[in-house]
Length: 323
Image 1 (tube, rainbow, N blue to C red):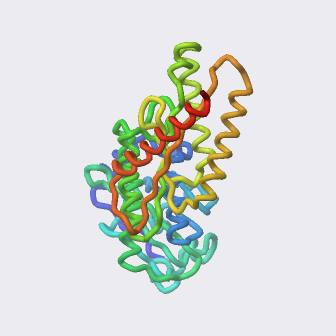
Image 2: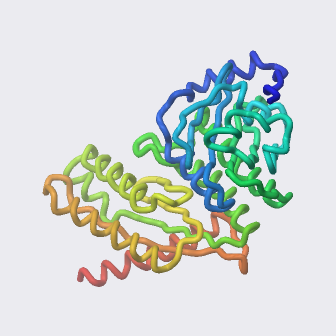
Image 3: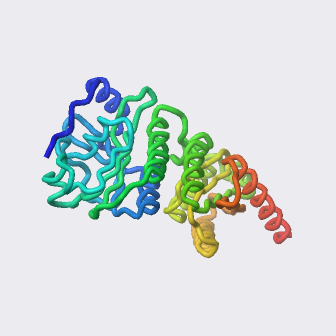
């Protein structure tokens, strides 16, 4: 086994990592959604957001792995951050750096590894976004480009810790954060010919809740609805509050039947909320959807505009039904 090499500018790199105050924090959905996406796209059992500390690598997000960290001297990611491009190990048993590594000879029995070095805005490497398999496999230039795109999504979220891309009330992405992540998702899905569905939600007559029950009740309703979206669309790539009482959900490979079931489940939970107490106001929502596939090209703003139109059509229909 060959230990990871020393990193140029290691002191500055570690200072930058520690200043972010991300090590040993709780899991966050914004990172977990990307590792879940990677596991689906590449069909690998493990996908990780790994941050390389002085003597360990710690996993901010882990899909398919129980361990929270490993020592740095046996880590694949310690080698990956010494490179500028995606590091690929197609068969660890045939690589002198890793053939007798404990992570290869024992759990999780790594045979294949591909890792993209995650950078700060100034280029310092914090760790990797990586996928792992217990079987050897080939990794094409197109695969590397897709992993790079996903790694850049992780970088967007890391950079968000120093920027205003998270909604302060609901702790989901705001419009800026949504646009940044969704742009990468669209690029990836175009490359791998995977359809994208955008759902736009608007809370009907929400102003009445604030006026009648106060802004605290209104804030409680917004937080509750955001929580329901996260639970209902747990495999979505982005759940965001675009502003006020407008929310959106971006999903890949969502079938029409699955979307109908999800919306029915969401409505049932809103009905439960409305029946629970009568001191917060009735919560109702309208929804519009649009889809992007390989036959058409569109920007994030295009999808928002189309779904928004569908949402207002739904809202108008609901008003007519109520008359």
